Length: 92
Image (tube, rainbow, N blue to C red; front, side):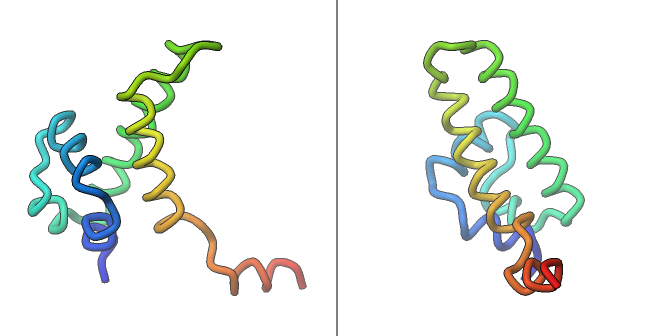
């Protein structure tokens, strides 16, 4: 399964709505993006998370920041976390 299809199935409707509102990507179109486009979208959402975190300082993260954070965490865990087998190999 391509990364875009994984992401589309992984994200909640609220997260998909956030992506649509921020970037104009319809959920159906999201599933047909290339892996490079998904990587770029991930980077853009991570930028939102960082910007909102910096703006919040020691205060409470905004709703926008929390949503971006949840998307970055979900996608990151699914696409970018090393497989357990890779971890086992690195310990040898």
